[in-house]
Image (cartoon, rainbow, N blue to C red; front, top):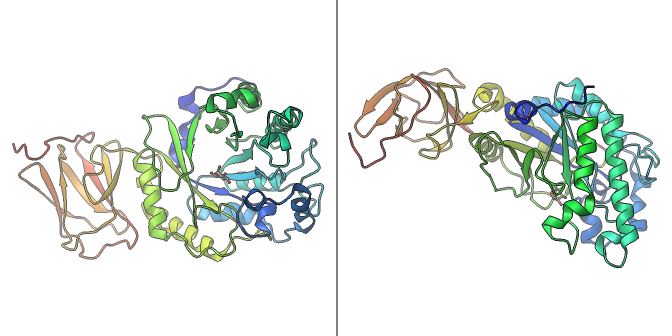
Length: 414
Ligand code: GLC
């Protein structure tokens, strides 16, 4: 591998093309089924929590199934919790005994995952939590500095292992850099982030790194489910979201509040409209299988993407966004209107398009709309069905006579 780091515009290309990824939260916490924060939320002592490793022997874990499911969903990359805040490694770490290789399962799940994801043709992402609740120094830096130091040393060694033993890694997804009592600007110094990331880039020159290690790096990743951030053009950003309630990224046994397929597709569209990515979470069961509710949703998104994907993958911003009934994306001379609220008249009005609209086609059915223009710079798409052709989000592809140009704001009538 050449050690030259390619420029940002080159490294970020696949990420902008991808627009959709799947993150998987899975580990010991999947056994109680009360979310990945169960150890801290319920104040479970580390030695008691560690007993879960004796029960963690997921015979049905099949990384190929996960990767195939992600592919079927239309995702272009995956991210996997190699180690969450509980400190349990799903891979072979030489600097810890608390791993899936040294306990009941005796398997390196990260190795299996990486191999399967690569085989499926998806980009490989690894999630790693810097903090580890088993170190008293995490909670009390001042009076337990040696423990805090040991936690930092562990993180550095484990990241080096992850970057060395599994071939090419496309995306390193940090989490858990916060330290009680430390300000934001002290965090990078505490973890020696600069040095770690230099090491990561030396071992994996093409890698993308998210912004959760205390340094901005390549990608802004946001957790709040409803927050869609639109960054300056070119900068990679991503919004991650669980399918069920926000509190549970890891398996939540009772999770009645799952988002609908329509909500999930709209979320993906909103990210794409801001030139960002949607990273959708699944929390498999302790035996490694993915619950039906999640499988069904992923497949339905995949079905939608197979008809409408050209409006999402590699999409750009369009200047007509937010002016209508949903969101829009663009590609060169093409604008894709994602209609969230289909008008009952079967007629759609677009104000402010300064271009000539040469054709307008419902992407999933091929049906052409009749195009008319009117006063106040309005373009009307007529003869469309009265019920939405796609029950989730209907996409209309409009071919323009040039790059999309917005203008003529009401009430200025030419
Ligand atoms: C937060 C949570 C963590 C979860 C992550 C996903 O950092 O603490 O449990 O893994 O968000 O983005």
